[in-house]
Image (cartoon, rainbow, N blue to C red; front, side, top):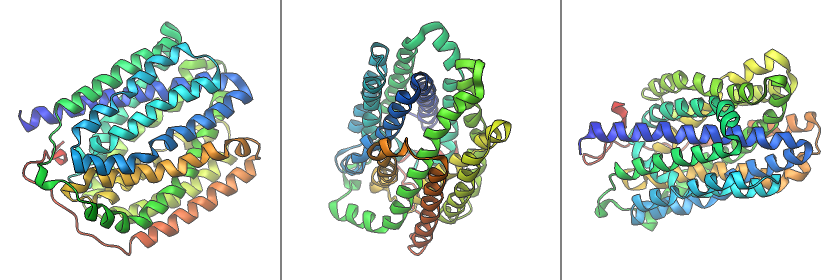
Length: 384
């Protein structure tokens, strides 16, 4: 199978993967926020579980590098089951628990998938531009899908998700057994990425707290526009802006160390959260559309790539994912208390966490590791 065919297959999978999650996220938020205070509690719980359940991905990533990555790509495909079951659940808390299994399955498979495009710092950002385009389409079509199918629109998300993982599996090329990771390799990786991981834990908590709050405020802003406008502003427009942003970021990452870029992004997020809690109306919508998350996500994985020798790519990506899971999982633990806090207290918590994340990312700069080059038997997604 040619490298060109493999790249095309994976990129189609990336678009389908993004579409399924875009439809899922917009529809779950729209559905749960219709239940008022109970829906908000379920939404905060779901937001936390969506990060907490993949928390074991650090183990799955290492096992993928150790035993073979294609098996874990197949396990990730089981998330389609969760999507398919959602139309049968109408109580907010039950709905949130069933929906969360998709994130557990994602944690199993995503580190192995990301390993395919961690050959260069810019590769992840380029591929994720295609995922962002799919996400924008999925979120934007939520209003139409919900109008035609109601909650059965989740079945459409299930089909697209499953198709994506079938393509990932079909075009996957596992490293040879001689390139498999050892326990010693994995321990070295954890020590090397420790400061970066702590920074991402704090950043993830602050970012997910902002996302959960914005999901509620956005429903009030769109008003009578209903599901169509909600999906447009919740996912379509932000992700549409992120597509060119990720391509520009990929160009920057090709020439600079990604870790200072990550520190800069986390600094911007502190200012962003001030605006998120203080602004309203059109200024808030404009702020929401800024593609800061694309800059954060791309620079985080590019920073991990600096430690990702060929035999550690799934492990390195899983360190990023697990760090984000720990931060997001705090939402599930603190969901009851957070829902009762005032906006000022939420603002202060976000700012403190953001500044702490910047400090930790600065410490991560002290550890310098060489960039690795893709091996001859590995597809180079930097050519995308």
